[in-house]
Image 1 (cartoon, rainbow, N blue to C red):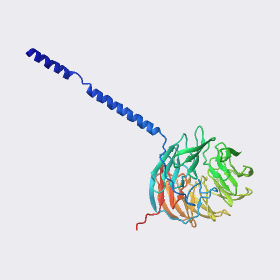
Image 2 (image 1 turned 90 degrees about the vertical axis):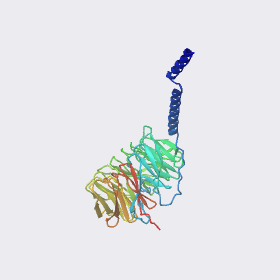
Image 3 (image 1 turned 120 degrees about the vertical axis):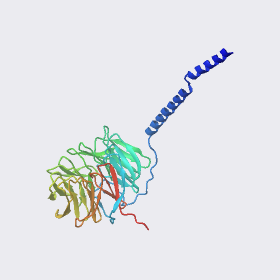
Image 4 (image 1 turned 180 degrees about the vertical axis):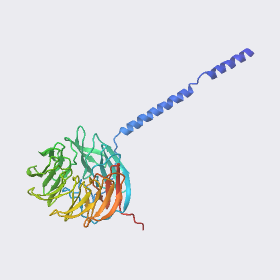
Length: 405
């Protein structure tokens, strides 16, 4: 009897010493759950984003729908100015922005150097969407409810992008380009890095092409059914918009790193430190103005003056008919931010991260704001607010102080 009792105790002790399979089963189940969750999250992250972005109704005259506001690149907003008083919001973009953003339909679209487009709510700064591409996109232009832009990759394409549903509506293969497209009455104008200028019709067929000495880095200006194009190869040309026929060409001593503007004359700066004005009909030089540094910015043109910055640390206002100096403002450092004229003020950024609002008549500084990094793209004005991007991967919105009733 005692022997049987002792045998049962020994068997029970042996059972207790043997490892249980239950904890091992729990560990296996946990591992299965973790792996399944990781697979699910990976699949989910790879799925295309089709969350609809609500678009506001277009407001005539309030949208910055072209890279320089209008086809002629004047960057002149002829609307009553509302001076900005404070920073309303700032948003992280995830990459450097070297080209001015675009605004319309209640959203801001910025082309980021890290191969993406960044969509943000214009009123609140809330991030709406980020779209990744195989290479850096150019600045975009609004075409109804779509965006038109090019992507510089191994296989470059011109995209027409549905904004609301974030998907490509149409794609056209092109050669490498760094200048944004232009949506003109004749079709879509695309300038390639190799010097090719092409007009693409609504059906995607090439209407005409013209070849310039490369590189082509900046967008053309369009006025009076004519195209005005500057190249890094020290040439300025005027082409007919409908068939690409060369009407005149002008050779300058320096290359060109910024877009021209057209308003009675063709205005552009040069790397030879001169600012030029040419006759629109003949290409004959009407006047030039010498500065103390190279000019990397596009001009802005209002009713009587032309404005630009140079790398001598000064910002200039000239009489647009004669080229006579009206005023110049010492702004410091180099200028890579092209200006915009909003009624009676001119706005531009500096490489040390300042946004300057200047009285266009007398050159007096009326507002100054600080950003976190240098500013290398032009500000834009949309719905009484000023938007600008800096080299610290941020987009800023400046506007009037909120009034409380």
